[in-house]
Amino acid sequence: MIVLVALGQRPRNSAGSYGIVGVLLHPSRLFKPPPPAASQADLAAVRRGEARRVSCFLRGSSAPFPSRLRQGWLYLSSHDAQWKPFWSIRRPAQQITGPIGSVVTRPADHREPRVKKGGKAEYGLVTIPAFVVVTCQTPSGSIDLVVPSADVPLVVGYFGPADQPLP
Image (cartoon, rainbow, N blue to C red; front, side, top):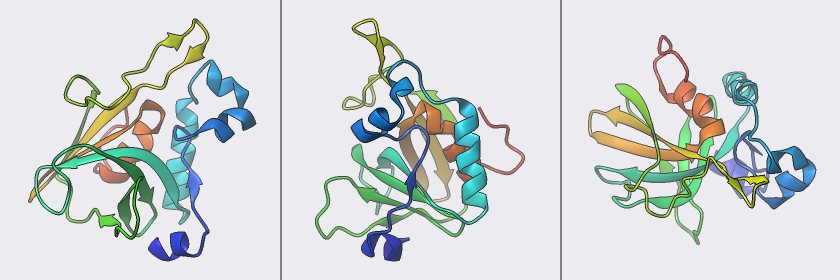
């Protein structure tokens, strides 16, 4: 994955991770979030060998992950998962490895102070995306991934056990 980023061949953004260019290309995102089927399509693409980039805040209970929320990108591919800080100059990507025991989700709340709570229409028209906390339990501690709600099926499907139902 780092090789792809280093060569400038950035993976496609996931369905729920878009900026102003994404809104200009798909103006409907101003009024409604992407459908869950789009995230399912992203998960299928990752399982086929493609990679996706998810907007993601990260926090961990043990090293090497930051103990406070940090904004960045979660890169998911069929062979690994990495998180890279959004504001980074020569900072290496954090590999997310090890067996994931369980995956639990909850809406972002006061414990995520810099994250937009979203889910409502601003100025009566523009929908602000809601964020969801995906907590992955590992033998060394927990990892919180705060992702747009449209990307929850992708992240849970990637890290969760195969028999776990998707939200």
